[in-house]
Amino acid sequence: MSYANQSETVSIIIVNITAEQQYRGLLERVVFSTLLAMPCCVFLCINGTMLFTLRSKPVFCETSRYILLYNLLFADTVQLALCQLLYIIGVCRIILTYPVCGVLVMLARLSNDISPLTLVVMSLERYVAVCYPLRHATIITIRNTGLAICVVWIFSLLNVLIRVLLLINFLFKNMESLLMKDICSDIFLLLDPITDQYDKAFTYLVLTSATVAITSSYIGVIVAARSASTDKASAHKARNTLLLHLVQLGLSLISTMHNLFIQSLSTILPRLAITRIKNVFYVFIFVLPRCLSSLIYGLRDQTIRPVLMYHLSCGLKLHSPNQC
Image 1 (cartoon, rainbow, N blue to C red):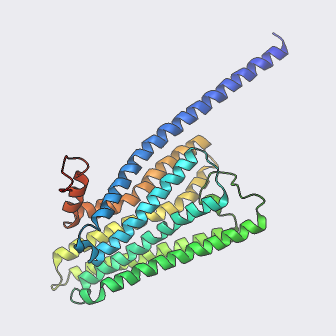
Image 2 (image 1 turned 60 degrees about the horizontal axis):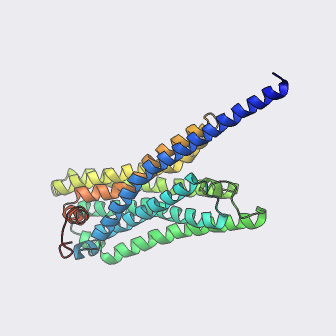
Image 3 (image 1 turned 60 degrees about the vertical axis):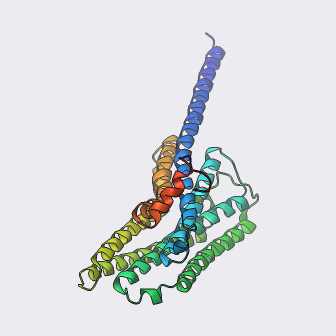
């Protein structure tokens, strides 16, 4: 066999192997994206039903803790929907422009910042309810709750505005094209070292402050539970709720640190392995925490649970429209 024939044979084998690897990679992406999209859609439906439930009765619209829960659940649902949208864009290898990607990522960051801050307000509300039961009605009013939610949104919007200004400043100075070189992700929007440093500083500040506030509320509730004048059942329930808030906050902390973990693994593992790890992280770090609010309150709260189950059963049982 001549040298030319050998080279042609080797080239054909390499092409076949490459084509087979590309097909396997495409098939794996389709299977993974389908398996991940199904639970995400289910949880989006549950969250949507929970949001509808929290607006279906006057007691939910006139109680501070349910108003705060609605704000938390709304932010989690928006975050879940945007994460799923960005995941689909990444799986389909769709390349966006920086402005379009920036809008999607900034909306995701806005909802992501609102969640831990709302958890802080909810923890303080439980702390006041247990430690100062006689003053709870005068401190935790609908007006004060609305002001607290406005502060949370304004603080989160200011952070997004600063990030947008930093991004625009860098784009106008250094970018030759607005088309991104890779898939849309918050990592690829950290174009400037100043933006990266600001993002880390703000994230660590919010999470550290939230951890201190929720932990302090938890300790305060435990101390108050030992008092003879405190309602033991209410204190025990508030303690468990605050503990669950700490779990939610811990998952939020992990979600902010996973980028560093992925970047470290990318230097020692192949791209396919990194993709699989990202898929696992997506389920347990991004999807699951956004569904905990519905599961925690929808199953534990005796006021919400029957109404939520009633609305969920409307899609499963043959009720008349008037019954639903």
